[in-house]
Image (cartoon, rainbow, N blue to C red; front, top):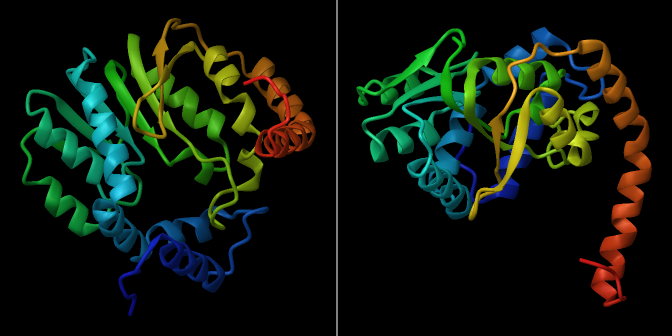
Length: 254
């Protein structure tokens, strides 16, 4: 039986144990095994933990506060999992419709969502959302560009995307094939019609606005993806040197 983690490090170790128990390899993810992982009760534990974790709670409050200033009567929370962010938004902004797209929703999450008349879990993404949220999702999926394109297609022209991706090897379910997007994500967003607006203050998310409804040029996107992957080791090394120089106090530009 899973026990409640005492801190974030304990939670990540528990998630890694489940990953290993299922025999998963993040360099060669298989869909059946990954589906079993994301259906595992560890994700309900993760959801309950992040609802009470001060850092996670602060990020959610910041995103909710940002939404107050955005013309977004309809909001999609993509990969919303346990639904903590969606419930916070639904409670704070009762005039907004909040839809959660989550392939593996737990029963407790569904039951808790039922208490909010403006919150529902949906099985597919219809076009025309005024805002989409993608929080801690893209680092978990084998093809993040396909998901980003799906999100862009689901937004109305002028709509907003709040993305908070963590392309770092913090836990085993962060797929290494996504890490190159650490530096190139805004470029791909722009190629898919999304222009970066800026950081959402107080959170780990950035805001984008849909400025084009043109169909994706997948040949161009996949070529750029291949280039981004080839350049990633050099960019990562340069960034490490830069960070060391900053720590030493060397004269480097901000």
